[in-house]
Length: 317
Image (cartoon, rainbow, N blue to C red; front, top):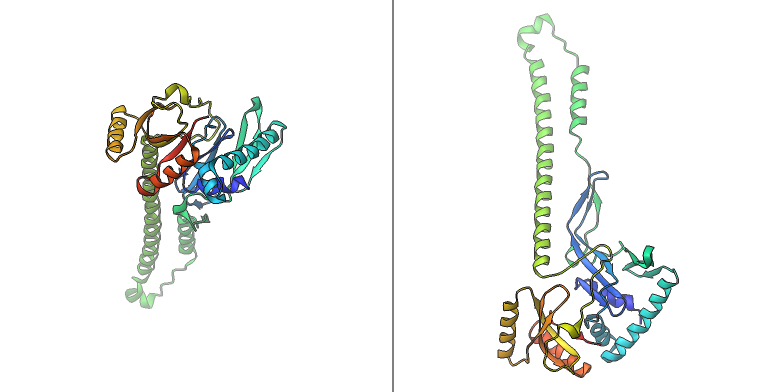
């Protein structure tokens, strides 16, 4: 089993893919940008970061592998743990770990894992087929210099016999040159103004996206963060302590919203309960909890199909 292939598949659809007992790969949307030095335009994309503090199994990667390989949840988790042990051993020995289409991992100063993302894949599906390109810069000053040089080189010849009938021709020449300069300058100004408007729209879209992600409590970082691991036993308020597999319906910043979600799910016949708060202070709500991992996985598939595709499985150790 090539674990990095399954991680790469999930990065197209999810902002966070946790590899149990190893770390998490996080993605963040980057708006379109222009390099003023090279006049290169870059399409919108997703940047990848790695956080070695997020190691708690959320069930996403394990469930995806179990479905793809047609094996049980426990067998998939066991195979993942075997691969991650080899990865951790390489990093401990000072070797670099190259993951295809994801990036390069190595141990840096103070024994912290460093990550360099790969640039060969754009995980933003809305930018499929778009590539970077170079634009031709506007050369308004060059055209102006050429017009000035042209004025100096054109001779003015007026014969005395035709002075009265041809005296207006130099003015026609000046008028033509002036119209040429005005049309060139107007075209360049319109292109510049259009570029400024597009840049403002891109910045506004990027700001709206950042605000939406903050409201959904999605957290990103481009470098490893010192984040605490979620202590499931300390925050859990679920009555059945023997059930280790919980199907999570959502996490809410306001407790009243979590209570309303529980009431709604209970009206639909689920054994919804308040799980507790996670490391970010969000109130977690579950559809149900199970002692058997296979039953929990089957229930998760049904909920994803009939209720919400955002539901996920939280398995306690």
